[in-house]
Figure 1 (cartoon, rainbow, N blue to C red):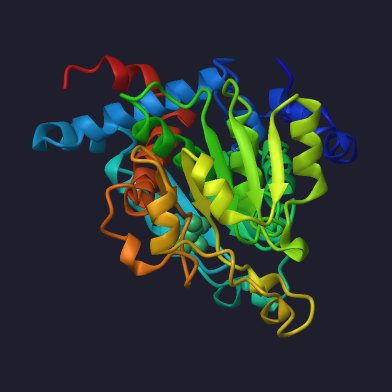
Figure 2: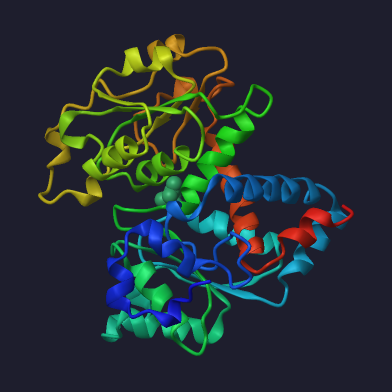
Length: 358
Ligand code: CP
């Protein structure tokens, strides 16, 4: 068992992501994370356990008695939601997940309202939050900040867990968990995820959800990944190299309609123009062929699913919303259940919830 307080930051930060995983696990060594920073921390076994726990929590929560039982699970814990980047779903679903488990919460949603505005460093801010709370759920535009903070806290007197709720352009691990949970639920009675074809479309270069989900899909057998985007926004080399290294079948193309014909799942994403290096840069790119509308819907098979991490702009036409294959609303709600499962598991309550009598 490796410990994050036994390695210097410089050495830890230079490790390949896969080699960081053991340092981030719960001390019980049960295969689940203490700090959740990267999608790469979750192997298939961990995914299956978390999805089962999410479904169990979803079921228990249906009855008043069950909901009250769940509320007792973490009534003795407090969570800090530190979001220095805009968010609706990730913030609210983590908040709701904490509420389901009975946690009390605090939040900072704008660094300008915290003492960071007075020049306090990120490190000191996080140390401050950890003085009052038992878990920090954080979103930041700064790539790698969640990782640095996890190391800082593990080397402090209050080593509380960090959940990365989106960092820079690189990772959004809990989004990938809810995406996998949505695929698991969608194909539950149709043979599962193995052997499926998943099409990613939109801004694949800067969409952190795509990078995280692409990785998790490699935990499944024979899942083909097709990346559809304008040349300027195509998926980045690290994603492609990971798939090539693992021998995963993948395709890079600009033909959405051809891809939809072969798809089991289509994962649409919006143009992430908040990352533009020059104002109006994205608006110069022709994205007209990278939208899902009535024509694309007619090409998708009867068991196909349409997903989107949301928020959307016009990349999925609203005429698709009522089609049973449109799973993006369910996907959003699944986020609450899988995040409740992750939080409960982080604190070691997986077995108790799975075995409870509700
Ligand atoms: N999918 C997602 O991260 O949405 P928000 O930005 O609204 O949290």
